[in-house]
Image 1: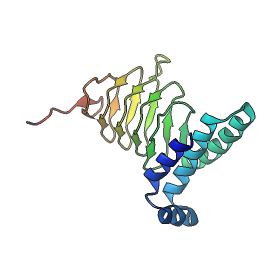
Image 2 (image 1 turned 90 degrees about the vertical axis):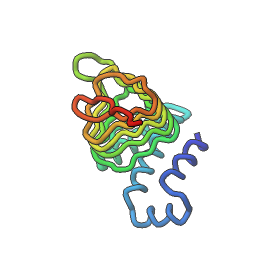
Image 3 (image 1 turned 60 degrees about the vertical axis):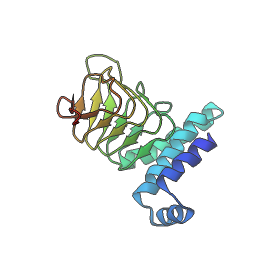
Image 4 (image 1 turned 60 degrees about the horizontal axis):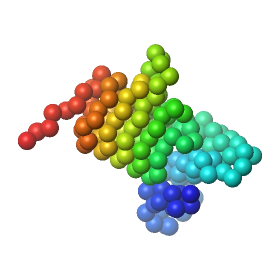
Length: 171
């Protein structure tokens, strides 16, 4: 788990200097990193008491930042660019090296309990929603404000619009 934390810490702070400046000034990336630190510690806790302790710290900070991510939903390399109403269902599965921007929502569609399964290296734009039992392939980019309600198996696709559709690739 410590290797995952170190890997993710480098996503937010390329150097020690960046880390300390962000920590001293309580910049956004430090607060997001702290939330993510608690999330990963909750996932790797050795006993229930420790797990609940980190969950409590994560939830307290998350309520201030507008972040709600359940333990065990996101793979290694999670990167959140902006806080503010990022919600990921506890039933969702997110691959490795995924990026989230503010106002993103990953969850069920209200008709069933099915939650999205998202591949690796997916970039989810500001205000994007991915709902229902959809599956997204690797390296997909979901545009800002898009509402994804159908699966996309095309790697590297760009999804935009409401409801989201794949952009045609120009030759």
